Image 1 (cartoon, rainbow, N blue to C red):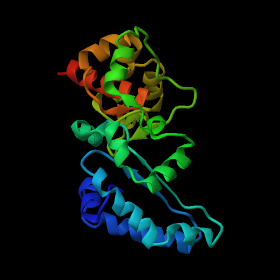
Image 2: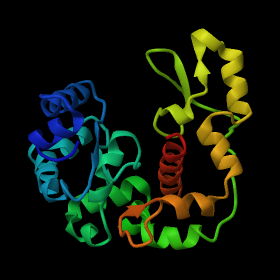
Image 3: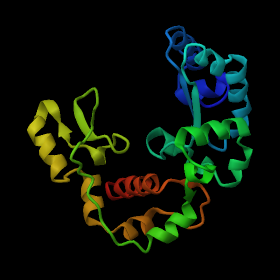
Length: 236
């Protein structure tokens, strides 16, 4: 969810999405399944967080879950700055914005993540991460012993690391076959994997980062943002 009905429908990209969420919560509770509300927050919608709190209280979500032995949960975060969410980079939440989060939602968020303060949830400023990472000449492999893949409607395959962009593509199941796709993954042949494996992190961040920006990011999410930007620029 993103706030009010109008705001949620806008971000989801479908009229009626907010109402569908409310109906889905009722169906879950009727079947003794506790719903969990995940709220994506940026500077454009942070002023609507009171609406989320009112929604939880007015629909008595906590009490209704307790009635069948369940536990309602809710949490806020900014999400990863990739895919469609990267459009909101200029409205990314800052440290000052955290003070606008209602105590009720703050408590739920800290409980969900098992953290003691919101900074641990939302991360550090781009300014701080930039200064740290421009001194980091390391490279890294994205190959995992237990990988997860995303397959789109055209059977293109991507590692489930970031957005399914061309620079992450490992091949096509129908055209190339599963063996070739897996080999491309294991050998880091997608442009994004190859770049992260061969280009020092400091070069990626120097080329794409903003040492003055105060938006808050988790370290790995920020690295992926820089990598996606770098790969798009190199692919032009």
